[in-house]
Image (spheres, rainbow over the protein chains, first blue to last red):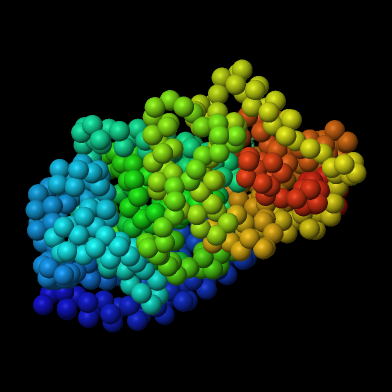
Length: 283
Length: 219
């Protein structure tokens, strides 16, 4: 099996990667302690990448995701291969570029993650609770969701974002997402716009994309999901929103909640025309 | 620094879908959120999409008048609204009863460095930081600073160590929007309807960081 071979090759690679991660993380930590700044961190990530031979550990998630997609699973013992991700049953290539989208069968606007939940429920017979559990993996519990997301997003590499947003509910979600982008609240008065509403801004040394500018929105959106060097995990866009809301001092965003999908609709549509290049590799 | 923080933040997320959390109830006394149809729908959607975790309760989605107006005008309100917001916050702004505005700059520097506080992953028993370096340059030695706000290096030296500037510095930290409506800077001493981020004593330390001639900010 092609996948098994890929996994083996990557596994060998990963042992090397762990060694490098430890080394470069130490180097990065060192570099910020000695105030070498963000350039240094960027350089370290570049070095890390080259050490991998331009590889990306996210490939492991992609391979696992492909296996999960094809595996017969759940109470009904069927694979996800008949799942309609927006381009018709079983079409994986390009699917990420048209999401979020309204689906007739569920009657809802869905992003990739919520669509996968729907398919796991409708096709494979999982309960909603079962399908939504463990959305973000950790060291000892790899997330199936993050693997599936990596595989499906990866199958859109090189293709342009092309979210329609024309259906009435899609339009409504876009407008609601936009409202949320500017919704200030909590202890710190933050909104998304505080950190992502102007160009050239930094928090400490981390560059913040202006998500209201097309080119920056495109660059940000098309590089998620992403392998995060600092976490050793491949993270989904749902995770990105979840963690930004945490930094915003908001309560906890529920996985695949309506607000998360509306905000994703706003950001994905603003990124239309951008060429997908995910999973990327990030700090 | 950042990386160490990021590593510290690698949490194992545990989710219990079974744990039912009731949608947040709006308290009409402290909710000024806009009442147009889209805004109402957005607030409703948000109330159904978040759950209280740790100290970050769903009440944080509620807006005081300042937050509501700034959201409504996407942080760029017309002049009259601007004046209104500044007036609201001037009223909220309280100076120390003992009349002393300056603490210890060394304590201030620690508070300026600390990004801890108010997130659902933070222990509420630990004091919050000011995280000033996230947005400001303050000293010559700390190069890991953000630029959402202007540089504060030489703040006291350039403006003069006067009573008036000291008072402004204290007031600005306690309530930035008393001076500029819809500022991106948190109101550290008047955090909307959601309590305070920094205590009076901590704000005094920070004022000293900016205003003490011996502080690294002025050297």
